[in-house]
Length: 319
Image (cartoon, rainbow, N blue to C red; front, top):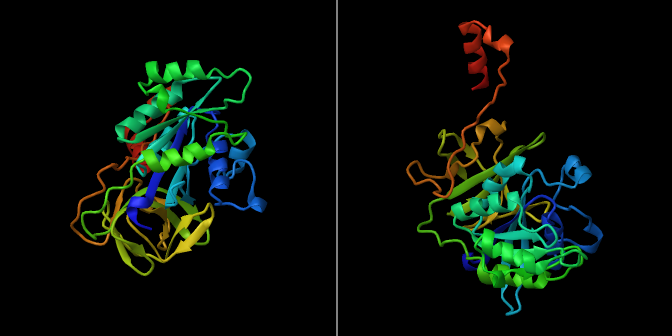
């Protein structure tokens, strides 16, 4: 699909404001999932996520949507966590998007993580689409939430969409707002492959599965690639998108969000924020930078008694 008809966006909010429920309704409304596949927390794949009702791991999914004008769009959604402890997951997802749906509970209003996520989105230069969710609750105060949007977040109240993800209210308006307000990805300046690595997981049978946002060029099976961070080279074995399950594609084009498999043995070989290319000399994807791996050690009095040699060995093993 042409890049001008692609929309990359994520959903951000404070914890328990209805992000995952909204994701489920978007998947259902666009026909991405069938009736027999419907279940709550569809994008939450971890047992702990389903048990606790929270999102821990961001998950991308590609949807097809035909707008009221008759134009077909590809919508790449990244569902994100709302808990402050998983803000790094949010920042990685924002790097792969041009827009963000900001979900605010009509009863709870703007909360701490709402503000933090808005600041992260502004840093990335994303277009924010505000959504006032759970308007069906008896204690919902939409007028007060609109005032908070203006006074705390400096977002015009008239831009907010009133919705209830649980009841399916306002879903069509949200989809139309995505294609109208969220900008399309920038057309590539050349055909050199540049893809942003924003996440990875390990599969015991297939090795590392890398999540990428293609900025320019094309990723296809049997093509050679290089990671700019360490100049390591691999051959792509498979590329595809999430629907929400992995669906093999012939290639990933500019603006696409998907996955690749290249017989990579360990997630340590992929640096989040790295740029994949097919040339030695090219510029990195500018919207994201490499995040250093940090190990935090709690130092008790017993550790203070360690000899310098033993302390040196400990720090080297953690690096």
